[in-house]
Image (cartoon, rainbow, N blue to C red; front, side, top):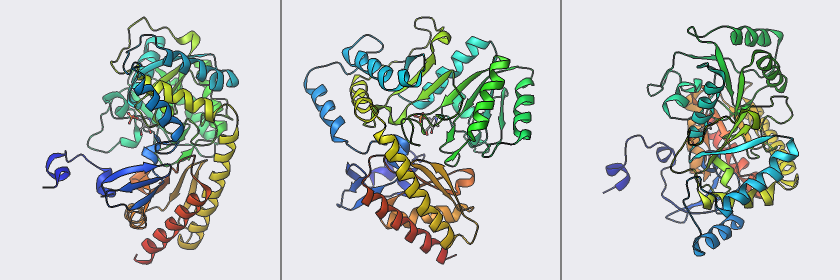
Length: 414
Ligand SMILES: Cc1ncc(COP(=O)(O)O)c(C=O)c1O
């Protein structure tokens, strides 16, 4: 019996694209039951930016498990949570002059989004939400309903009090005008209370908003008393270079949703960073059984301490990003006949090939060449590269070579 096909729900997805049984992993390499090694340019959909089984965090986790420390603690005090809070304050919040508190929300990104929306609604009294085409915020009912990238999919929920504006790569006066008028217009009779934006979109196509547009969002929302939620769940924690992908703009969000790679080790963990004066929650008003994952607090503090006490990782990611984009541009020139384009920042990059079947063939061919890459964006027409930030330069080069071969093969049979 094939246990997976017999016993697992039909909803299973990634295993159809990569039909191997993966049994071990280290850094940027994942190995299947037969000992075949794959380069992992998917990195747990962005949850493994620090590589598989990063030895720094594995040591901390083993020590934690052996010493009889708490694993589960809801939101009671523990030394691990104290160290995590002190470390994120010292390495991330204080250097960026962010006067924010940490809300532990539960294990998933969708929970963070849910909490941020509830807080915004509570603060402004308005239900209507403005989002962006290509935005993806999770699969809970409300998160899915404000994920414009899900529109048209049968599973997507829809809320009437949501409106989405187009993605903006190079801002024009018309974009700002549209933003301004939309924010001033009620949606279904409801004034807009909050904007939710992925400053760099992941599922929407590995693409970054123009920082000037992000700054305009803040200027107009401040004037209108509208809150700004930055969803940094995929692009944050260093994926695009800086810790937050909006750095370099004046977005200055009121709430920042962080998850995926925040534990370092790929453990379930999500937090919201909330501007201190907006933290008006009543005690227990937003709860959740799995808000106190102490193993994740311990590994997260280690990740922040080791990788965010200076700018080495950030600079390295920018350098790697340059390598990836140069390789993708060369692939686009060689095989795209003018129809391919390259997007993204740092190690959140994409090759837009403009065709669903072609993107899918590239991902399949890459797998046959032992490289794991996924597709994303409108109609899944973009090949997305999410190499771990801690990848070795030779592995990055090797993966890009395999990708070029996969693209060449896919193009040659068209
Ligand atoms: C930007 C963004 N927000 C939210 C989510 C949802 O996170 P989760 O799958 O942990 O609920 C994702 C997941 O891919 C994401 O990329």
